[in-house]
Length: 387
Image 1: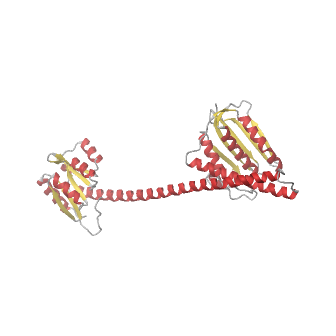
Image 2: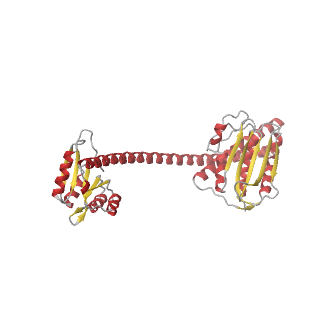
């Protein structure tokens, strides 16, 4: 540790030099300097210098290169090994460039050839040395505080992941059981139901399905942020997958009187994808389009080779819904973020779907983007590699 300098104290300087004449000259130059009052101590040998450095009583050291059979650099290395860090300025008659580089790499803060030494440049070097030490101390303090903050953030993030996993795990089993019993009742296995009971049970079944999707998203987030979510890509037909997803969502679209159309390029190449994961992405994007579109709206799913990125296929989901406010476009892929100006949407979810979609597309080495015009609709596009 470097000894701190109080505002009203003298600057304690340790001169390490085996030449008494040079030591007297340096002391005289220090006395001529006006900006500081110096308290001067001379260490004439390597052993004395090491002993005085270990005492940790000085603010700065002036170090000669030659110290008998040893060198000033040897002294620096030995002090460093003992975790002693006294700011040093090297004073020597050896003015070669390699020595300067070696001295600086060894921890010397400044370097003055003895033939150029004067009270002015000696005082200037000491001032710069102290300023640098102060700056290094402040940087070190901020780094320590930053590391503490980072550690706290890591711990909080781990707590969040444990919370996600715990909530998902504790809710999944009872929710699955509740859904199964609702299904049994709707099938009439436990007895006949009147129309009102069927209506209520269908509402309960829909709520269970919504909760199940949210719980699944929590599981996915836990896997993503612990590095356990992976994709297994293989060649596959994109049109077949798109038509399969549309077929699954058509009953829901018909209920909302929304038309789903496709515009797939006839020469579309096969792509490299994890079928289940891209199905998940398409379901999320199209379900969002249905959720934010009004009765009589349209959804267009298109796919073609990306003209701006050869070797890629671009898939887009375009709707005629309410659109997304411009100020929110940059945030909609953030975890837990939800569009605020959304008067039509029910069952808003947890705000995890688009975040998961973006991460899944990243795992496919692609990108997910959005364009939108408020009141006219949105277009979500992602890219996949051609096979």
